[in-house]
Length: 214
Picture 1 (cartoon, rainbow, N blue to C red):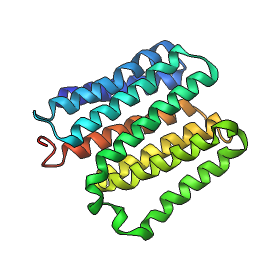
Picture 2: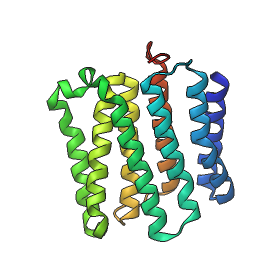
Picture 3: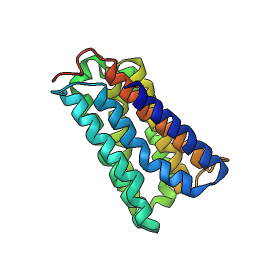
Picture 4: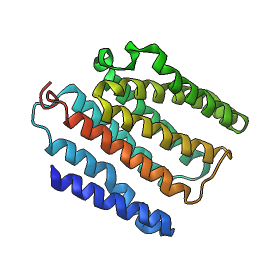
């Protein structure tokens, strides 16, 4: 497992550096390798028969790979819609995967849910003026990622942090796509938070004593 995680970290570093340097061919190639490498780390870090949690996480990583890869074959709105749809599916799969862990999540402490709902509300509010026909999809996506982030706290601290970082990554995509905010080296910020989030979710699942068997 360590070699697979090491490969993921190495390729992640190369990808973010390529983003910073604006070297698109390297950034494109490495992005296509990242989710397969992380899925490989999860596979070699668990044994058959794999748990429902692991199987669904692999499916979420597959959806994420589609979101990384397919927009490169499309242009304009079609590329963005494909990316949005793929990652919406990934968030829904994650939420379904984490649902059995709800008793250990923040759902048992409703007051602590307020920051999640506030973040989703602010993101939708900021993007709404330019979202147009995509606004309903943005609202659904915000709901899905909040559900994922809250339920991921059932994995423990690392899973909760990873999911929160995922929210940050998706928020950065949204505010850039709808003309709200573009940071210097915006793509590098998006990808570094995305890659860290996915890694933390996988490590949180590997850290659970019962992930190897369903």
